[in-house]
Length: 214
Length: 299
Ligand code: SF4
Ligand code: SF4
Picture (cartoon, rainbow over the protein chains, first blue to last red):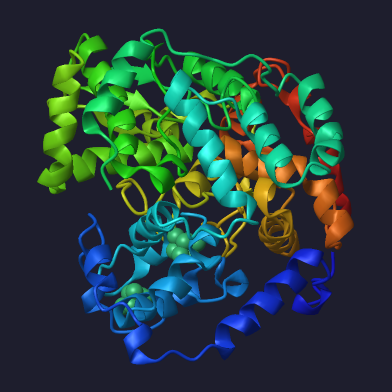
């Protein structure tokens, strides 16, 4: 293989064009101070792991190390800045938080010890609570399907969860991925039976008594 | 010390990562590691549960930690978590229960409610950590029957095994797996993307992004002359292996490369049969003699 540089990556999917359009819309928006939510930062800072957002020096290490930042409309550094400035609507309805793959590189490298991954998690939960999560993105749908399955049975069945997500977001995808499923199945790498734990009552008791906290 | 095996269910050791389970058991048998499965374990919550409900996510993972204490018969319980996500989530839960009383108190109370207790003695370990640090590379070296003969191996550590809560290796420049490869007689490939994200669940949700992240890893490893790549997580392996054809079709420029679990490569060097190591489950077949032949021809 001869290295041809980055130019041999083709950016031609539909996904990218949707993305770019969204990105420009985000940038063109101007905000007046009275439209901002001054308490937003405080609310985020209350969540465990997020208390240090005020220490951010906007150095950009997080954005630089983030493998997803090229696909985000606001990279992590900007998100932290926007939280502190009170851009609640933009932050919560953005794709950014959902594109965070929870890889923890930002958390491991931030010179101020800010747990950015936890901030992203907090934003995801906040967005769901305020019903502001982007509705067309499959990621929140998958997270929700996963959540429901695991909560009920104590264990996950990846094939089933992914299928449910496909049907809710893009019903043409199952057909495309059917071959992959069959290939996995032939190799004994696909589980079709929903696995359950025995003591589900115990698990449900734990989940019920911690309640739904944050 | 009791080792309690925790298979995990997300990209499971019983399904997509079946070859990982098979090879891990074979290698542990060879190394004489006594272990048993954690009884009635539940899902750790992975990286997604936390996105919906944090307290429940910690509650979920803490049940496993408590169950381990109950089951351990001699000494401190050590959960063996072969999936990087399980490893991270359970370590994080333990740490946060310790560090934040706001989390620790209600979780402990909830466990008590359900008839469990967590004293904080459970340790969560990755099999790689156990093999390199508990058993030691000397013992590994002594067991090698079919050395890798200079096979060029790119070790891919992925995100969650080395950062930010693990203690057994460096977060940016890990070396454990490379040392293991050397002990098996292989040649570790030095490449900079060892800990870069493989795309995780993105491959299922926003495929364009997920595939491109995996592409960068495959491309870089090949550019540095790797014959095979080894991983230590069922999710990374699936992303990098099963989607190779699709990556090649949509991005282009990669040749098919076998992606193994590090335990499969170990087993192969120990002379364990291919069937026992789950080689028949691979999408890109691994044939040691053929690859070596390639390498010699290239020289
Ligand atoms: S790395 Fe830390 S301090 Fe630097 S911009 Fe990111 S959050 Fe702020
Ligand atoms: S954890 Fe999320 S925000 Fe941080 S580097 Fe990884 S993908 Fe980017």
